[in-house]
Image (cartoon, rainbow, N blue to C red; front, top):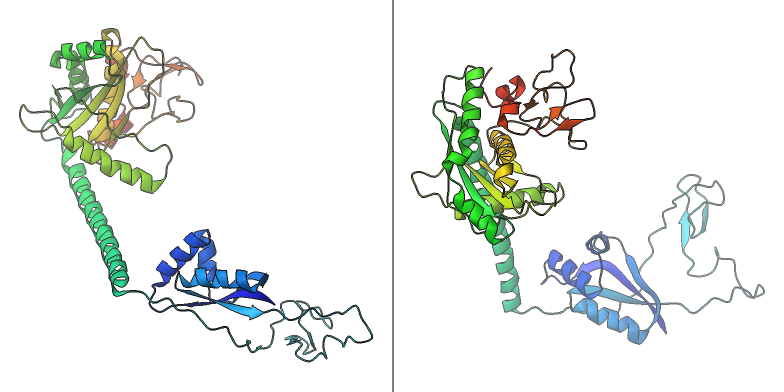
Length: 407
């Protein structure tokens, strides 16, 4: 005797439907969307024409998930080749009849009416054969308690995450407001990190002092004066002790959840690695990861995050590169107070006109200096070069508006 293994969407009431789906998908190696389809409320034939032993194995495995599979016997083959004894399908006893909703013609089961060609003929209600005894797997009270406990903890975790996101969001909103009031200087902490774990980089970091970053502070003083900012010193640059731990790597793609998760991890890492001890913690924290200048590998992209007031800069551990390093540091500091990039991400060319220091220059090319958020000095429509130091950069009007230096 052969059987069809059929599922009508029934499961043991002792089981949560999601738990039943999960167990069924695990045992039968189903994709989540396939498991969801099984519970859509429609009858699904899982296996056809299997022997009784195999059919009951499927039924038993399903029962262990709290799911009810029914075994429906398959009728004996109808030898239709013998025309002398075969009755027409429409008149055979027990033949399933369907009625066309368009023309009313009755015929044996089909997907197309032979009278008018209408599609999707709905079969008349066919009584099901008496089902094989259903198997319900009892669930112990300890298992039920365990499932309830898991649901409680899942709800608690989601609630905690939502609370954290709310607190972070409110903190970001309030921080964004006071950082651009410009009624007093913002402290910027420079936190050096040995990115390649080499001794000569440690030696380089030990020689750093706040005078190393004097030009960085002077750049902001001069640009603030040029835009008429009443505050004489918008940023106070301070050097923090070296940080031993590398920050979490940013996500490779643009998945929003991955970005949010990285941002939360990064905020925790920044808090845990604040080595500054002389006075209050800096308002803006810039972690400068120094790499071996003797190895010609391109540096990773630096970043500055306004929602958190921190930045990560990749730089070379070489005094001859310090001026260029500070151009990158200035760029990322401005990101933390609201400035946006002004260059094409694909070509790295400055965007016109916002990314040009002097967009009204005639002739336009070559430009003499770089707009700090445009990053490079435009030489032509397709060529540009990195400014050698901050003396070859300016804060343009668009950037000044973004950071609220001007209206």
